[in-house]
Image 1 (cartoon, rainbow, N blue to C red):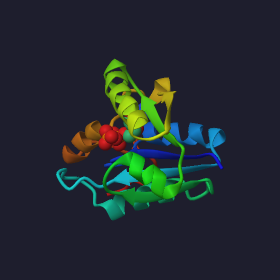
Image 2: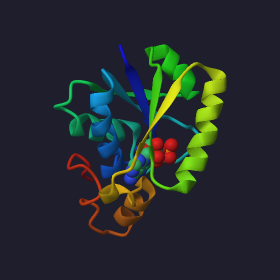
Image 3: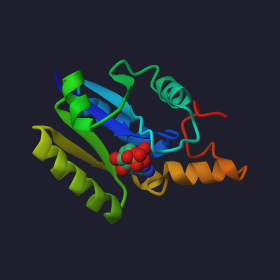
Image 4: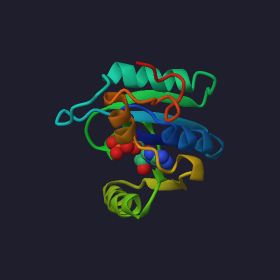
Length: 150
Ligand code: ADP
């Protein structure tokens, strides 16, 4: 079975993440959206809220599951028997960052990272911009799936 994980913070999930996951569905038998829990980070949304937003966005997609994890992404891959990591690329900064992580992960485990280029319509969206809009009472609804409501 071709199983991929799509790791991230998803604080909250955006239309950029949604696009990458949707486009990943035909490439894999199963995608596990993996919410990383980093005790050093502070989040706007609790892990339960972040999980619920994603589960609701993909309630009609049986190939998509949502899990949380702590520790190394490659260890989580081993735990769930996933051979692939799915990531999105928006810009050169993402590329440089992702390249170092993908090379490190390859040193740690025989896991292939598969990159999908962002769609033109969602390339500018990031969770940090969404949080900024929310904090300043802007209309965030155009940037996130309908399941993300405060
Ligand atoms: P992290 O906490 O690791 O920064 P994110 O939740 O920001 O995780 O993102 C998870 C993945 O989604 C990353 O591969 C990131 O590049 C990708 N991603 C985020 N926003 C977009 C977007 N607008 N288009 C394509 N990929 C995106």
